Image: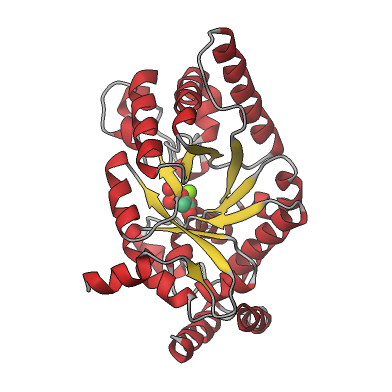
Amino acid sequence: EKSRWNKFSGEPAVTSDGKKFDIFGNIGSPDDVEKVLERGGEGIGLFRSEFLYLSSKILPDEEKQYDAYKKVLEKMDGRPVIVRTLDIGGDKDVPALRLAKEANPFLGLRALRLCRRKEDVFHTQLRALLRASIYGNLKIMFPMISSMEELIWAKEKLRQCQEELQEEQVPFKEKIEIGIMVEIPAVAVMAECFAGECDFFSIGTNDLSQYSLAVDRGNETVADLYTYYHPAVIRLIKMAIDGAHKNNIMCGMCGEAAGDPKMIPLLMGMGLDEYSMAAASIPEVKEWIGKLNTEKCKELVEQILRLSTAKEIEEMLRKFYIQNK
Ligand code: PEP
Ligand code: MG
């Protein structure tokens, strides 16, 4: 099994008609980088930066965060690394912040919303990120964006941190790409507008499914209703990609769907540029992409968009996979 991984993991993901796609890995801590590189990941499409906060009773200071980001950037040796700023709240509690209990935490004070209330926490993270930026190809991504005001605010905070470091004569990279997670339906609907204010999108299908279908992603009792094969979720994904491309920015995906072999031909047909997934999925996905033809994938999109249920969509994608793998 290992030798099979290695055969495809070392090669770029190129379709049978010669189109190359970026296959990246998702990580939750610096220790996960090796797995991504071993399996052939060409970048980090999502570094969930929560780990430092969840594992400790006190908030991680600037130095501790700086060390973690620097470690990842150095290990990735110039390859792209997308670090997502703090995404806590929701189901992820941080004892050190002593947050109030909420009746609907997934609809509450989560991620960037929380950072707006706790500006010092955000400020510390942005400074650590900027200082680490000189060690590689860092991109910064904001989670749970739901309005333009939030994006503008986050960019302004980043600019303030840059000015501060400049005054202190602390080095940082001048040009850092800024992106957002597209994981709230409102942003997918307004994608064109958001794409005008950032350098890339990454679609988070885990939350995009949860929020567009009103199904708690962690609730067993409604797990049967939770699916990214739903035609509405598929359309929201398409809107995000189209909005990005109209503004000539890159659109990736870091939710579970990006590593699902059944979804990949559909995503490719819709023009998704970058696929970020758990390290374990990378070799299989690279092998599968080698068998795909982008024109055939575009035809698949046409067919899928005619269907009205998740069941029919999953079935058609399953057939396509069986027939072409
Ligand atoms: C997502 O929502 O799809 C995502 C990738 O982020 P998380 O699973 O960390 O919420
Ligand atoms: Mg999410």
